[in-house]
Length: 408
Ligand SMILES: *[C@@H]1O[C@H](CO)[C@@H](O)[C@H](O)[C@H]1NC(C)=O
Ligand SMILES: *[C@@H]1O[C@H](CO)[C@@H](O)[C@H](O)[C@H]1NC(C)=O
Ligand SMILES: *[C@@H]1O[C@H](CO)[C@@H](O)[C@H](O)[C@H]1NC(C)=O
Ligand SMILES: *[C@@H]1O[C@H](CO)[C@@H](O)[C@H](O)[C@H]1NC(C)=O
Ligand SMILES: *[C@@H]1O[C@H](CO)[C@@H](O)[C@H](O)[C@H]1NC(C)=O
Ligand SMILES: *[C@@H]1O[C@H](CO)[C@@H](O)[C@H](O)[C@H]1NC(C)=O
Image (tube, rainbow, N blue to C red):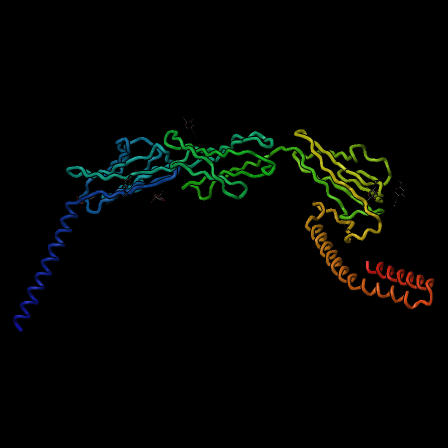
């Protein structure tokens, strides 16, 4: 029992002494380790930075802030350097806080807080100043480009620190450009270029240069819309798939081109259009009010702009009035020509049906031939004389032919 009590007492005193040692140690560190504490600061140029220096245990020793050039800014609450951008925020034995406003890139560097104990204790704080990139500019595009020209778009932004990132977008799709970074003073000039050969699909396409940087909440963007000139491309659309005599027929010369060709010129079979009332030319349209077989031929439309001339042709084949073609829609004048897939399908079906008919007919005739021969023989046999036999045979023959015709 006594032994146990002694043991507890020994343990207790052991713990207490450990605690005492720890307490004195930390107190000793506090009073001896009078030490200024600072923090690194990051600021966007033009903004303001607070530089704070703290001392937890201070026996009324003065604090001082000095700049990267070792010039004293504040000694306690006394201003030492004449710079209106530097002001006192708080001065006490525990803290010296100063504010640098309208910060420029040249303010960046290591600031020192000194505590004038013996010897002097110092702590460094790094002031990082971020440079805001300038609005990007796109150069290198001389409006308008001609088809097949190789153009270079260059986007430049300067003043960023650290160097800004440039991205390119063709409409909304990102494309890769080259990148070049040069230091100009303390900031960077970033340049990115895109080089490509333009074609007519680039006409009206928007190229956007986007500048991203830590100092920007949303990227800066600049857009250049390409204008590409190209010669005309023509296509003739027509209102009927199977033009038939007597119908109303319209051809349209659809043209693209930049600049858009102003006029289209119609011709037929290499010469002028026949001067007949049934044919009306109105802008890009050629209308034939009543189709006639004499309208057969090759129709051609031609258009030009300053980059060239092109043409398109349409071969008109006027079918007879009662041609059993597929149903036609006189109102349809779509942007495309005849539906080739549809025609192909129709041809395939027609070929298939014809083949079936030939097979069926072939089989039927093979079977029918026998009957027909028997009929002929029968007619001759039944006849009382040769004449009647011939007439009967002929009648039978005529009958068979009628049948044949029916089956064709
Ligand atoms: C600097 O300190 C002052 C006073 O405490 C405060 O009003 C201001 O917002 C601080 N500025 C910055 C940039 O932290
Ligand atoms: C520190 O200065 C204050 C007055 O500013 C004074 O009251 C105090 O006694 C001083 N303390 C020491 C440790 O010198
Ligand atoms: C402060 O910045 C300096 C220089 O960039 C760096 O070496 C140091 O580690 C930083 N200190 C802290 C506490 O972040
Ligand atoms: C970078 O410097 C080189 C060499 O001086 C120069 O040719 C180039 O144009 C500069 N680029 C930028 C983005 O300023
Ligand atoms: C076609 O034109 C010829 C001569 O121009 C005319 O005699 C004929 O009646 C026309 N046919 C139709 C179906 O209009
Ligand atoms: C026009 O084409 C039709 C095809 O049915 C043909 O019969 C006719 O002879 C052609 N007319 C001319 C003038 O070529």
